[in-house]
Length: 363
Image (tube, rainbow, N blue to C red):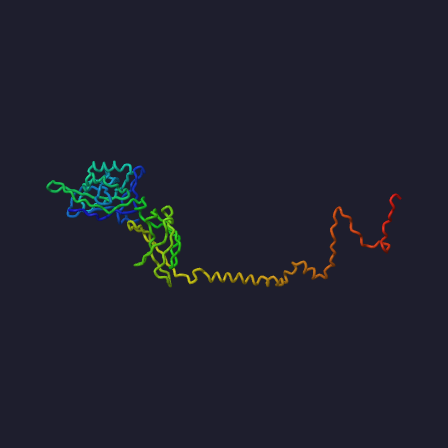
């Protein structure tokens, strides 16, 4: 008899919860789980049908698989592992298992507890267990099974381990996701600036990938263009064909080079290049219109006003009524302390004006 994992746990999208958060750790979803159908990790026993005792514990991601400081929590869980006697079935599913993480300062205490309770599926020597630091952002499920034979002896089946489960809180292992982009099309020549919002990423371990069939290219950006781990400003790469006659649809996604993890792709459309990319024709036309208006300016100023507007000009109105009145000669202004100007008018009696009489001093 042997065990087989027929439904692997989902690798990403689950957040490990601390005990101090005071909330349920949730349940580990199955790999085929989606929004409409919920699945959970499941195993199948081959070449045996009968009662079975199953133990599930957490081990490290890398071999040799050592006991992990994080704990399994839920129904039938104790000391960080799950154990229960199951009925006579070939397939067993585990819907009520959650992962509870421990703080770094509590790692030593947790590992000591694992060793004391015999939670060491692969019997790793204690000295080797403590050799390296533990990766607190990833775990594996280890399934063990045993049953009592007809002879009364208990048979232990070989343990099997699942694929890794990653903590969604850690940016170096979290699920990659494109939340929003400000545009989903651009020129086939590339160079268009795009703002992309995403879940947490590491600026030194992320790239934007464009692909179609066998073609692949990467967006251009620097680490300074990754804003607070949740936004990336980049420029699109040129498409493989520089001269397009119609739009071409490709895919765009995030990719983490360290583990080759990728996000769900989104559509991006490459458009044919504009014949006048810098709109020089439009600029020349606009400049020509300006010069034309400058040339026509003096001509427009000599145009006679329409007949219905002629009454607005007082000079033209006066000319229409008759000859203009004689101009009045301008006279100099008289100051307050200045003598009045000599009169040029003749006296009423005619003749020259008589000079004023003069008198000798003392007469």
